[in-house]
Length: 89
Image (cartoon, rainbow, N blue to C red):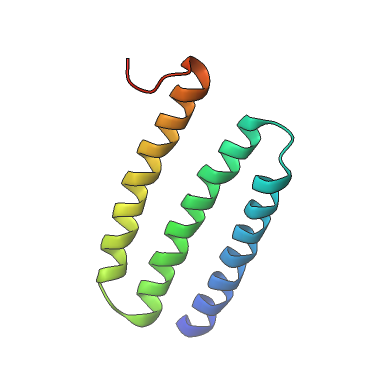
């Protein structure tokens, strides 16, 4: 039962990533594109965690944590660049 639930979850997460790619390329404004990129890395973290559950390894959870930290820092840096035009003051 868990195997079926994981396959369905992975499929739905992949569909959501594809929809994020569409919004990233066709977004009308820059904030829409930033939000799509932010949502894409959250979905990729979910995908990596699901793959770790499916393959029963712990290394995927560490990779998901690393991507989460880098994604947060990059979102803050891009938002600061858009608002101020400079990342480091």
